[in-house]
Image (tube, rainbow, N blue to C red; front, side, top):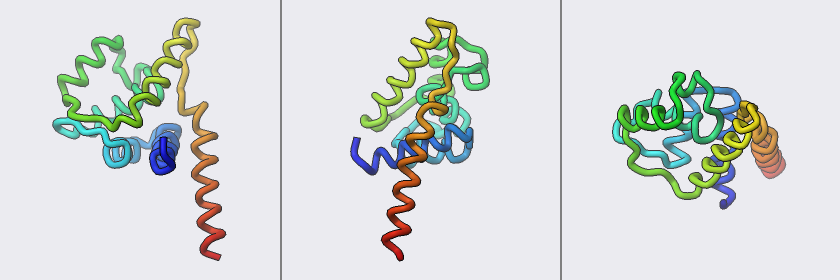
Length: 132
């Protein structure tokens, strides 16, 4: 993943950690390249959280994975996703699956946030030094 993509994902992870719905939807569409037929903000938020952070009832509305995916596709079909973020979303999904096997509910943003925040802080410090 190139630096620009890492920065976009770090901002996205920061928004997921803070559960900032508006920012999550904005970044998911504008910087992570997610495109759907209707651009429904609620569906985009739920998909972003589901694939990159958590599968808790507040996201899935209590549905199992299959029913949730079918419902999201019914409400707002996916047109395209940026390739560079598919595998990192898959990793998040797989890590949660391993946790579920041991009856552990994981919220991936809690684990990745310190690394995302570190990258964003490092860039901010570099910009501050460059402008002084």
